[in-house]
Length: 380
Image (cartoon, rainbow, N blue to C red):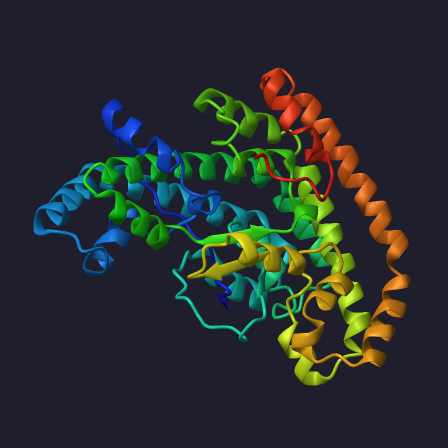
């Protein structure tokens, strides 16, 4: 399995319309792209133009894709501008919290950049932090910025109000990307469409413990047959809970880092380097289908605690019996804290699911009632 750690997962957008006939033809292949496409620097047309030879596009198809790109370039640029302005607004809001030197470093984080895939340690998952907002980028780069504990708290409080604006912009970007993909799909063969999805999508899996009800619904929206109106209402309703989830996930990350630091003393320097990001809650994979055994292996690596994640790769790390025992003993000191966080997450998800009652049908509610649990199964 190959993995990559993107410095930024960034936005790309465009819009289009799909005829009813084409929509019906594509129905069996899935109505939507995977959730991760909502943040791309390149538009769908740009990605496919770059992969034109690999897809075996004819001259006529390439010309039609260029026409589609031209039709949507204005919206594409507008959404890019809005995103940059939002990141700049976050930077301005930090005001006097950062030192002059820190501000210079943070200014670089405002820019969206495309990351190329990189091969990771063979057989080892690489965890990544979400970096769509300036708050997330600063959090990820906190050590390099030499942020104090007080600064981290002030930054989190100051930028919390931007979460809803980012969520709304992401929803618009995703809708635009979906529409452009469907427009372009009309000029591709079924085989090309399948290859195109692999070019467009970034494969991301998120730890169940870090997911909200809305995120889980978003991931199975097609299986639940959610209407466009339902999807919009879910996004809007989740906005009321976004800051609460952000705070819970920040607390979880801190606890994971604390556990990782304690367990780190048990590992060799080489082992620590291989698992240095195991306290994050996302894995970005490249060139695998994330199905069957692949998905099962990644799911093991996304378990709730650092201890459980290390156990999943213990043989690959060549952990000794003594190390395994010490890791278990070290984790015991954190067990109660993890249990307390688990109960907080469950309570928040129950509250969010209740708020979504009027949006979902009785059949849909029945299928997702287990989503309040960390280990909720996907809708089948």
